[in-house]
Image (cartoon, rainbow, N blue to C red; front, top):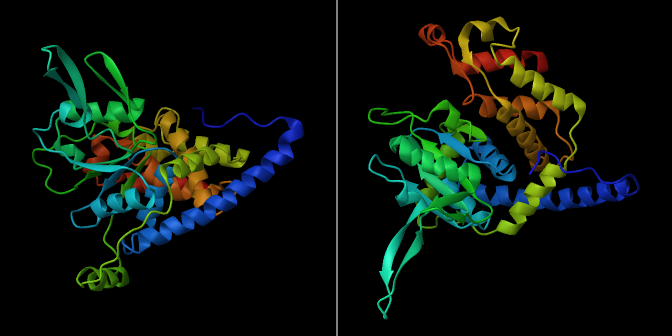
Amino acid sequence: MSITDPQPVANDGQEGKEDLAADVEKLVQNLADVKSGIAQVIYGQTEVIDEVLITLLAGGHALLIGVPGLAKTRLVETLGTVLGLAEKRVQFTPDLMPADIIGSEVLEESDTGKRSFRFIEGPVFCQLLMADEINRASPRTQSALLQAMQEKQVSVAGQRHILPKPFHVLATQNPLEQEGTYPLPEAQLDRFLLQVDVGYPDLEAERRMLLATTGDDEQTAREVMTADDLMAAQRVIRRLPVGESVVDAILGLVRSGRPEESDNPLVQANVAWGPGPRASQALMLAARARALLDGRLTPSIDDVVALARPALRHRMALNFSARAEGVTLETVIDDLLSPLA
């Protein structure tokens, strides 16, 4: 599917705008109920919840990075319930094999003695998959999952098996204890629409969480939307108009992050390689999704600025001298955003 759908013909333009406005109005209320339902279970972490919802609304996958105990697993489970998605979880370990994720064929013998192969689906056949600590699995297993993410299908013994719709992966990484892990190559990180950094909750949120989760009346999530509703929302997002100023801001930001094309001295001195075209696509879709989440019909440059860090920080790499001098990607991205501020 292309980034934007074909525009309506001239004589149906006004009717198309009215239909879009009605669809947006309905979705805004549904999404407000979704956020309210998540907030009953996940305390604080408003920015994290928004970025994960933006990822799902844009039809993409997210990489969640944070230390243990920050409710990453609970967030995925809650999203599955609230959005009405079939959710599964895989704990990635060094001995995990590709067949443990995508499934395998087994040889069966019928009552008549006839033998045949039957495909047994793996946990990837769901609508919302949590890939827990994805960097602990071998590159071969990581690649099997990332291929499924990209192609929305798997191939076993020469046969294609289509994954359910919608299909989203929320993968997690623990920034601690990196011994014995297999960091995702930058080219594979590019498959994730956003990288969501999960930090500690603020004092008030942690106080509410402490009181709510240690009592005997813990809140549970309830279904607010269905999988069909989510796919309908994804189609609406692709219909939202985008102004030329926002398009120019996205292109200017992404292209200025490439050392071969940038005239930014900080980029030229510190960046080994910059974001590719997928970064522009991610920013375009994510900006539309953020606008819808806020109840707006069209994204603004503020949306681009707000989403630049999660969209770019896993699509850029610092050179050796930059790492040695303590330069961070956040510093570089903030400098790239200064003309848009």
